[in-house]
Image (tube, rainbow, N blue to C red; front, top):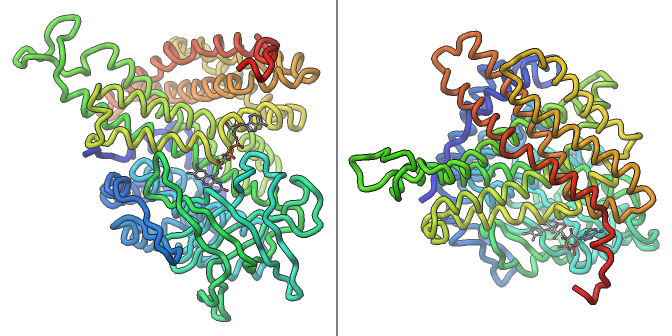
Length: 598
Ligand SMILES: Cc1cc2nc3c(=O)[nH]c(=O)nc-3n(C[C@H](O)[C@H](O)[C@H](O)COP(=O)(O)OP(=O)(O)OC[C@H]3O[C@@H](n4cnc5c(N)ncnc54)[C@H](O)[C@@H]3O)c2cc1C
């Protein structure tokens, strides 16, 4: 039976010693978050994830969700109690607006909880996770009336949210959406159409589900410019704001799928359902993007969560499984074999995953703080640069952390040998669950195109240039420190490769867009390596400083960080040059074959 221990100390190290979380106490919601309080909040969250959510992970996967003839859906045993416990503790509204019942605490803390919950039980965590997107969209784009009707119920977790984009004939290309909206005299719309693959579309955790739906108003322009966003509840709220008349929306089927069995993936039928417009007519896609950016970061966090829980279990196994002898002589002379953790190849696997996990966590937390600045700072320039960072990093975090997160679950499974393939060990669930994160919220190929085609050139490349400048500044500022050389040299090399790749696109992709498409996934991963390398350089500096100042008996904690950082620099960063070589090869060869030749 797999286990999970939330990495509280690692989170606190990044927040307090690397990112200086306390520095931001001028932002609304940050003032009271002293290091003690942050530790207490994170500790409570860890306990809930370890003791309530994780024990339901394997059983939830086995039992799955059941759809009944009346269209209702039952979640696995224990899910409802866990959901109620989570809501009662206020986790859904942790970072939400206090005017609507939220606690107004930093989004950064919600991101920490999101990692723990995703690692403990990804399928369960998606139920409250999707509500976050609905809260974000209504907060930014809803009228006062919509906000007061829906936000308090969503923020308390009493009702849950969904996002409905996908139709059978359109996933990536949302311009093809057919779901129809017809205006009514009372200002509402009737919504008709079929959405597929809707996560948490129907379930028994809450009495009302609030669907955010993309549809085309009759007579609207073709393509994405004619799409609007609607709020369509399962039950129309009555005059007291409670679930009233049943709306004409129902779950037609739930999908049988590879993983996240405990999360209901629904076909949703809208048969003239009553909906209300969110934001302006035909401006649904930008409004939905509010939800999607939140959701994309959340999906990147899922990649990290699965990578970390798979790693933790692989380490336990590698310490216990006895096979072969260490190359340098018996490490366990009293036993008939050594634990497999003595073998360099097993260590390579474990260290590679761990080095990724820690840097990925730092990247998420850094970006989450930028999210808080972008939404809460009263300084326009700070908001702008934080927003630039978020825009640039969202596809990187979504694409890289889920690609690598999945690879890492497979690598952790490999540590178990054949036992990793046997269901009772639970490693196959991590692989199956992690796989979806590469696909939904925009398949990762689309994230790469978003990075190269939109985020990179936006505002004359302002966000990317700021990122490059920041790393150059860090290298310069720390260049005199000998202890930093093993971290700074590979980072400098990687940054050079990234800048050359960026230049190559500027020179070769404007006139020939296929060159951008052909190199986009490599570019995204090259970007990710450098961003994660920068995180390791910062963590190494913090660890070096603590060791130099006296580490209060925690020397091992910091020397482990330094070793993991060196592993990243030695083993992962050299890949930047391979990515650059592939990008510079351009698209000619791959576009030379006609479709029939494949
Ligand atoms: C379990 C699960 C849960 C989901 N939850 C939700 C949900 O809650 N709400 C919701 O609305 N949707 C949801 N989805 C849908 C999901 O977001 C889509 O499946 C995804 O966006 C991809 O769309 P598609 O499957 O139609 O693939 P397609 O759009 O057909 O793409 C197929 C492949 O072609 C590539 N491709 C497509 N266009 C281009 C291009 N222009 N350039 C380069 N490559 C391209 C893609 O990268 C992809 O690899 C879910 C899906 C699953 C499986």
